[in-house]
Length: 310
Image (cartoon, rainbow, N blue to C red; front, top):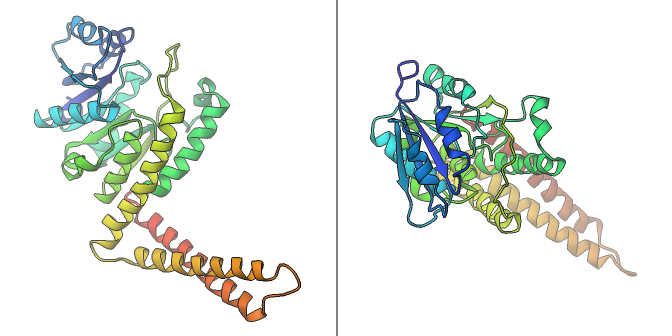
């Protein structure tokens, strides 16, 4: 136990036979339960996990590969059903330093936070193991996830080193959470809908010689689709269905006015090509609604930031 709380760890693993034993053997003593979810590996990941001989470890094997999100949700459901107060995700590739596990747990067990996640970008030294392309991609993805999830104070969304409280788990609509690489982004969207307080914790990553199995041409479109759909899903579930809040009113009205102004502006510009010229009234009919719409969208953004559960 840690600070009076029963701690469980989910270890999602797919073809991690080389590193799974290292991941499990370095698990802190205060961890009560460890569930390794072998997501239909084609190597001996499950056998090597059992061979560690830790009585805290239970190995679950998926017959069909369901994605990292599916493995994590399986582990969470088992640990919370067994009475764990907090469930932590530590991947089977030994990139998540167990020395920082207590740092990740403190916001939950001491401050009542529902969800805590590692952030590799608090310290400049964390950039040392990343390529410039990966850093740029993380920055862009972080901004898009902020807008989609509504957690404007969080960064590094693809960092899977996370801790979730049992109370937050009970509030989640698990059926609507994505199962693939976009799992972390989908979880944040659903946590915000449930008004779960979340916090970033500065934790560096460990980079070894493991080879990433991520196929960007396939993953990026799915990720962007999840963020786009997730944004509207969150807006409807959080700001429309319960009460049609000012955020929804400003957002939809602002989009309508900005869109109207844009269409009129395009028409006026096209009309003015050649000897003809659009009238001042036509341009005013474009600019006035357009600027008003942009102002309302900015106000909706400000209110959304203020509504972010901290």
